[in-house]
Structures are given as structure tokens and as C-alpha cells.
Image 1 (cartoon, rainbow, N blue to C red):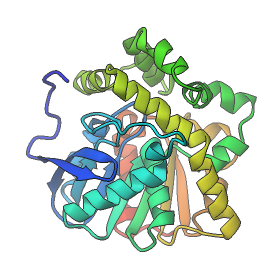
Image 2: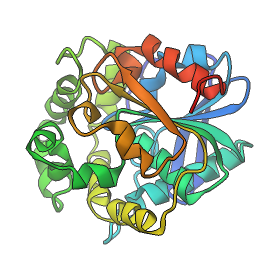
Image 3: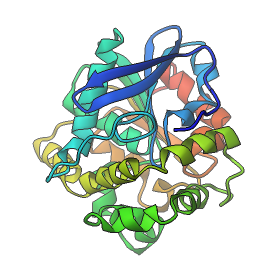
Image 4: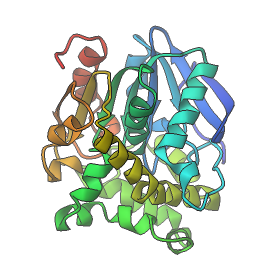
Length: 304
């Protein structure tokens, strides 16, 4: 990718080999470890507005998910397993171990939040606290897919189509597709919420064919193996053993369906949450609102 602005001055860069390939991550701050996981169609840069405040209290680790940003894109598997949230979660647990963190708190947005709650289910005891931004569990998304949700989240069906259909269509003009996606999920339906320097990161990361393929594989996994993993856990009664905070945009994706807290209670008996003013990209649309709700939770000052 071309030279891009450094939005995390003073942070250290890492390239760590994991079962999912090489993962790029930034680290900085001091205090207990906090892993920040971005979503689609972004990179770890999306945390640049929260990082300065969070770094005053926590040792931050901010990776690019496998197949996104500066991280390697694993080869697709026939069952999409390399892009399952289980595989991504395993790789990120190994990343945290490499950086010296056996236990940690986690804040995830969108796809990163799906990796986060999968870590909570697959690796009991690893997470001290889990916060998720503007999602409900994958099983709740698919089983609650009605007309309204399908119109809002058409990309779940589109990106999950067999290769090379979505890759080919997006590849004709990736800049248009990803700009449209970003602005269509904000409260204001434009790009004004995003720092132009961050947008340059997102556009560069979305321009390469291997990363476009990786994003599609991410959603193919979501429609198949991720859903199967959720359903198996629900059938077995497995739950996340740490406190969970669910925040969603007042005009975000979960706000259009059933109560997000009700959806999360199936996996997180110790769950609390509330809407935050904004759309899907809360960390950039309303960082102050996120921090106001997040910091007391991370410090154990808010009831769960």
C-alpha cells in the first residue's frame, strides 16, 4: 500500500506470524491490556479517535484482522474455515500471547466484535471484559433476517455469494463500492464523520484483489461455518463467562431489529448496554459517547 498518515504517533508496529498468517498490529499506552478489533470495510485505523484516551488507562493492541489492512490474506478453504471467527479468534489469542498478554479486555466493532464474542465462547477465562459495538450475534442476524434487515444489510447476502461474483463486481470500482458502504451506514449518510487520512487507509486496504476476496470470504464464513458454531453453542448452552457491554448506534444496524440486549442475553448472561447517538461507525461518529459508556464498564464501575 502507498505511504499513509500515521494516526497513532508513538505506537509500536508489529508483524507477528500466527495460524492465520502474518498479522500487523500497533501497540501503545500503559495499564491492563485491551485488544481493539475493527470491522468491515475498515482497518485498525478506525480506533484513532478513541486510542489517545484509552491509552491513558490501558496497554492497547490494535491489529488488522486477517485479510484486512496490512495483515496477510489467508488462502480460502473449501468450507471457508480460514475466515471463520473461530480461526481469526485463535490467531488473535496467539498474537496477544506473543505480546505478553494471556488475559485481556476486548473492544470490537462489526466483524471484530464477532471475533471478540467468539473468543469469549471458545477461550473461557481469556477475556476479562468484552465490549461490542453495533452488532448482535451472527445467529440472531440470520434468524432475524426480515425485509427491513435485509435492505439494511444486503451485503451479508451479496458478499457471501460464490466466488467470483462479488469479487468481480466490486473489483470494477472498489473505491465507489466501499465509499458507498461507509456513508450509507452513518447517521448523516455521508463521509463527513471520517478523517480524510483514515479514509485514505481504508481505500488503500480495499483496493487489492486479495483483500477484496478476503472480505467476501469473511462473509461466506458468516453465512456458513460461523452460523453453525453459534448454533452449536446455543444448543449446548455455552455462554460468555465475562461481563459484556453492548453498545449500538441510535440509527445503527441493530437498532432496526429486536432489542439488541435480548439478542445478547442468549450468549452473555452478564450483559448490559444502551444505544449511543450515531450510526454504525460509532468510534468515529461519536467517540465521546462511546468513551462515556465504555470507560466505566472497563473499570468495573458500571453495573452489569
